[in-house]
Structures are given as structure tokens and as C-alpha cells.
Length: 470
Image (cartoon, rainbow, N blue to C red; front, side, top):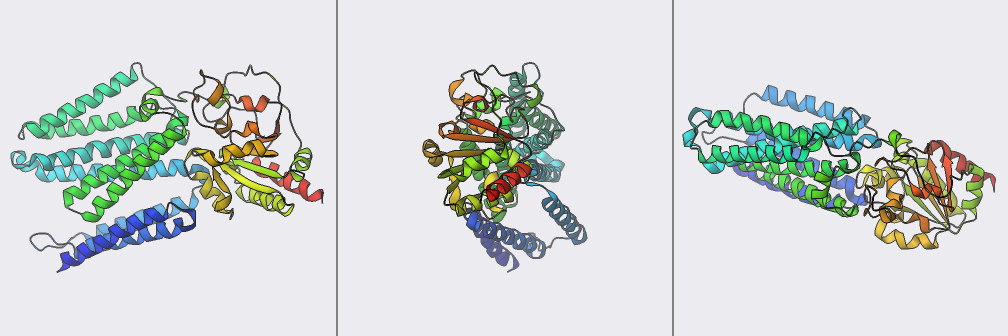
């Protein structure tokens, strides 16, 4: 009876995961979707704790340890989530994803230890699922921790000699050892298991270590899909429907997001993984420009006059806006311009802010209407009829080199065509290069003016100047 009730709870949990993911597709319903999926997870966890019974009729024991771990995890997760800034969201996603991979990895280790007494009686299919969870979970854990370190600035890009050959060779060794274990009828299985475990962790490190900064969001998304697949393996092991569904949803969503991001940069996943795009690039070490033209600086007063008498303004938010926490003042600017009868929109690049959806969430914090957030494909034709484009902290996503310079590491990446507007105002702290570590030819164009300074301070001054004009 209890197991029947538990299966119903798992079904409800699975449905809430599916509906929650659907609601996450729209900012207006995203919060509801998140809460719905969280509710499904909560009832699934507590249903398992109190209703699960073994074939012998035994319930879960060690409830003190279970609830202690739940309490610690809840408190730590809550504090981290409350404290994290939007600019650090990619790091947090990577860290939390690594924890998911670690869980899948440890499940495989624990389940294998249950089988060590007589490996000859283990079904090959059962062992295969354990090994898949171990390998994928280990790669996801180790890779996510390296990604977190690189995004937080604690780990530098590092490429070994013949890096890709080493990685491919390591992967082949893992696959060969796995095949030997499955086909070996228990011979040397224990030793091989821990060898695969160690090599998978090493592969996860070497897999992410050489990949450059501009490609890190793609790697995070790919590792997220790995974690989902590893969790699905745990669902197979325990015949747990809700764990299986959740893992499949995470795996498929991560895979689709990876494909979308690769498409946004006009690159194949293989190219991302072996091309080291942006690798070892440092904004401070950017090659001096040899572009024609010169930098033209504009004051907040002159920018205010230009924007006040415009008919159409498009704002391009970027990472610099997120760093300065300028989302609220940019919304004030939007409202001020609209009060003057000016048409205002936001141009959103798929990887603006270094993660898909990053800018959407950031602007939603300041109550910017979702209808004003226009995706790249829709907004690009509008730049030609725009009087002023205000670029706030964006760099690589507006760099013409992606279309004009075949030698550029971002060549082929679709960009926002801001250079087609009548006037372009770029707000940046300095002339340092962007995330990909390269100079931006846009800054030297005759229609471009630079408004230097912290985004929040510069926009606050711009708002004040526009108000002063009456």
C-alpha cells in the first residue's frame, strides 16, 4: 500500500517537473514554474523517506543523518542563493551542477560497493548503468569545479602539449576498461572500477582546463546535461521514476541549450571543445589596435541631448551593466525617454551577460517589460532605423570583427548590428578588451562615441542631464 502511494507521489512529482520546465520558458511564469518544480521535489523526497520499503518490508533508517544532511544542505543553499550577485550566476550554476555530478558519482560508488562480495553474479546491464553514472558524474563534477574556478578567476586557462590527443587517449582508455569490466565476468573488476573512477575525474579536469573564457557558458551547459544523464542512471538503478524523469529533463534541456548557444556563436560543439576559443586570452594583454579612425569621447550632457531628441532608442545591455548593478537606473532611463514620446527597446544577444537568459532575469529585477526585450534576429533589422543605440557594458556581442575579420577568434559569431544605427553611444569603464580578449573595431567608427565610467554612475548622470533639459 505504501509503495503504491509512493508511486503516485512520484507521478505527481514528475508532472510538476515537466510543467515547471514549461513555465520556465516564459519570464512571466518562470517563478511559478520554479516553485512548482520545487514542490514536486519536496514531496518526492519526503515520500521516499517515509513511504519507501524494501522487498523485505523494511523502511529507511538513519533518519537523523538524513534530516541533518537535509537541514545543512538547505541552509547552505539558501544562504548562497541569497548572497550571490547576478554577475556571479554562471559560477553558482557551475558549482551547483558540480554537486549534482558528485551525487551521481557517489551513488555509483556506493552501489558498486554493495556488489563487491561476488562480482560474478552481477548482471552486465546493471554494472553498465553503475559505470555510466560513475563516468558521467565524475566528468561533470570535476569539469564543473574547474569551470567554477575559471569563471571566478581562481583557475587560469591551461593547455598541455598535445592536449586533445591526451584527452582522446584518456577517454579511449576509460571506454576500454569499462568494456573489460562488463565482459570480464568479475575478473579484476574492483581494481578496474577504481581505475575508471580516477581516470574519469582526471578526464573531467583536462576536458575543461584548456577551453577559453568565451566558450565557458557552452561548457557549463554541456556539463549540466551530463549531470542530468548521470542522475537518470541513478533512476534506472533504483527504479525511481521521478529521479529518471528529472534526470532526462535536465539532460535534454542542457543539450538543447548547448545547441542553441553554439548556434548563437555560429560554431559547432566539436569546434568549441577542440578549438580553445578565447583560450589564454586576457583583456589586459589585448593586442593594440590598428583600426582606422580614433576614439571619440562624449559627455553625459551631449549624450543626453542626442537621446532626448531621438525618435527611437535601442539599449544593448551587457556584462558591464550586471557588474555595476545598473538595471534599475537603465529602467529609469527607459521610462524617462518614453515620457518624451521616444520608442525604447532592449536588444538581447543570446549569450549577453555570459549566459542565456542572464540579461532577461537581470532586467526583470527592475520591472522592465518582457515585451521590450527583443531577440537578436528580430532586432537586427531595426538598427538601420534607430536614431541612438546605447551599449551598456556589452563588447564582443557588438564587435564587427565577427563579420569582417576571418582571423578573429569570434569570426562567424552572429552579433547585434548596432553599427547600422545613426548614432552609437558605448558605455564602458575603459578601453580594455571584452571577454574574448580582443579589441573592438566598433569603438573607432565615426558614428560611435564613448561614454566612459561605471555604468550605474554614468547612467545616473545621463538621467539627471535629460531631466535638466526639461
